[in-house]
Amino acid sequence: DTAVSQTPKYLVTQMGNDKSIKCEQNLGHDTMYWYKQDSKKFLKIMFSYNNKELIINETVPNRFSPKSPDKAHLNLHINSLELGDSAVYFCASSQDRRTRVLQGQFFGPGTRLTVL
Amino acid sequence: DQQVKQNSPSLSVQEGRISILNCDYTNSMFDYFLWYKKYPAEGPTFLISISSIKDKNEDGRFTVFLNKSAKHLSLHIVPSQPGDSAVYFCAASGRRGMDSNYQLIWGAGTKLIIKP
Image 1 (tube, each protein chain N blue to C red):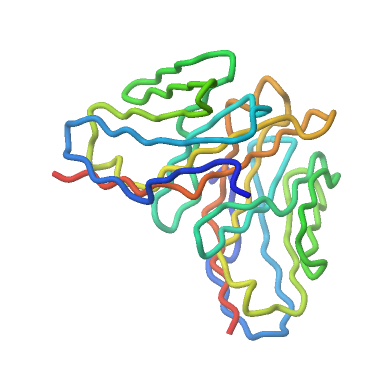
Image 2 (cartoon, one colour):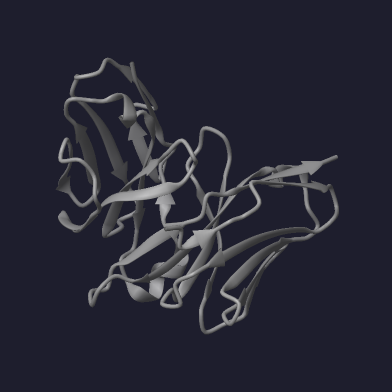
């Protein structure tokens, strides 16, 4: 009964490959996010979807494409992987209402991507 | 340009004593502040939050103080317990544009070590 789940937990792949990371939340939340935790440990937002609609799209290469088949799922596809894509990627979800922002975002366990 | 700064990468505290984690921000438009706790190989977990209309919020052993004039907030943990050893992230949120979506801006984290 995990609230936010991500698969896989670890992903090791070669440069140039295409890979996907899946995320699912069973909290009934309206909004889902993808974050990248870089080598300096900063968490940086990449994308945010609200009810399957893209609402935040920070400056990330267009090799990264989020796909939200329904509001409980937000998958991240990465094409032509590069060495610099190696990082931990976190999925998160939240209720997207002003009065609920203080309840915070719920995070998945992260996916450690290593590009060789 | 770091809008949320946690200047101490690590902090070591004796069990039973008070732990004080600090966070500074630069954007006066932030109106919500949150603390997250992260264990290794797990996603961040929401801990406590505060609205900019308050200067203190308390939840059990955890208290967050907000000093808006100094653009500074702190998390107090008292008494500190071994299970509190983790990385603590400060995050700030402000309304993005005119919509109702709130984006979190994160600090780099402070690693808290509780010594027995």
